[in-house]
Image (cartoon, rainbow, N blue to C red; front, side, top):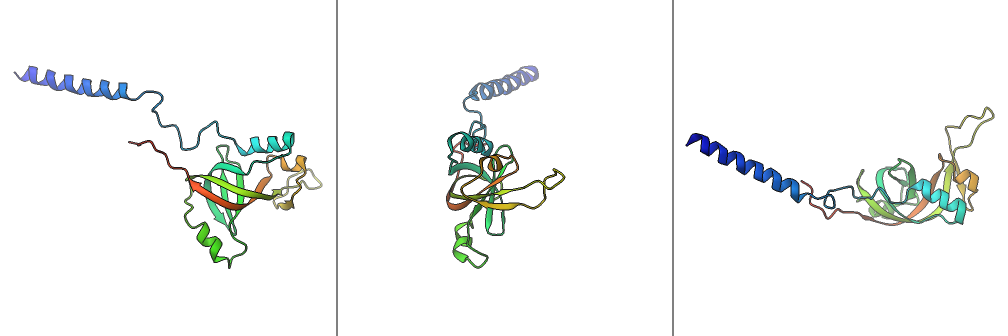
Length: 166
């Protein structure tokens, strides 16, 4: 009687495990809120070099607020800065960007206004301080991996996964 009871419990556990494993197909597996095939910042810079246009709509992760700028990054860790207020007294800009949470993915739209460029000194070493360059952009400077695009933030929406994570 006791042996039969243990066998039935073991069979139920194995059946539950097998059912759970078969229910999780490859299509249902959670990958990420931003697809790995999504356009990266370096791809946008290469597009600018070939076509002369830089995309204004991005899917990025929010990093932090630095002064008047909201800093976002892509899968490669490259950053983009979005100006969300005119100066430190702009309360409307603060209100506009109040809901940004570090690490969350956002679809961000902006108006491209320039870029930060880190020039080289006389020894050929990269300087620690940047120069803000306005448009039109110099293709060689802008496509440098260390240059940082700067936008005026027009809008953002948080990308929410519709999958149930457990």
